[in-house]
Length: 337
Ligand code: 5GP
Ligand code: MN
Image (cartoon, rainbow, N blue to C red; front, side, top):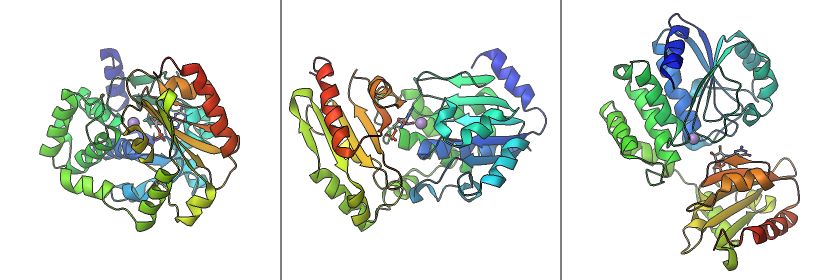
């Protein structure tokens, strides 16, 4: 953020405002962590703030401080619309294009609020008056920490805020191991621990709450894994029937794609999952090194994300999607060598 933008946001927040904070659809740990941390911060600053999520999120995020107050647009449309229309400031966190909030887009785009974007994805759109966009950041939570510092309020960070930010940094960095994890990230994490974030219990709350059926679904996914050796690529499929057989709950497939990437020599891993309600296939893409799954998802599967982690969708059947994927790969043979 430029000094002028920081001053702009400061004066915007000088007096109590009606504020809506929005994460992307299918919010993850970083989206929920960053919106909650900012929410606690703004409420402490006497603002009237509310978080409106486009839809539900996995149970392993439902212990975070303040989480029960999040309004879910797809469950409570009328209330969410009223709140959005009453907001004079809207913060959008962990996404950078309004198409990422699904059905909420039309309502949000029509408000007259001042928009503030805080995000670390590539190629931001220009809907916001104040944009804090940095693709080098590990997570939006790290940026919310910086944002609070820019406003001179690091001292006001509470244990609740610290817990939320720690969670999002941990989940978005694969527990501090991805390349975007910098020494600064670790310094911020250290500060968050000093403010009251409890590392072991946060890790436990996120990662050690598996159900038996989820582990069995993982077993099924791993059995379905296919290696395409000449492209150093693997893909996993999960059909609707398999999701039902293993009692699929939202968030159960999170992280599965990384098993593909853990195979020696593999540079590109994909997971294709049939949607239970509608006839499309959702995909998660991961890569190592310079191969950009963001570009790949944008070019072929109506998606996007980061260089090494992206997502997209296909309106073809699973079989046709996998065929198309294999065919597209022929154009990337050199890049994936
Ligand atoms: P995941 O595979 O974990 O769902 O998402 C990985 C990354 O890609 C995240 O940063 C997420 O925001 C982004 N992403 C996932 N699906 C889509 C999509 O359909 N469109 C875009 N633009 N980004 C996506
Ligand atoms: Mn993120």
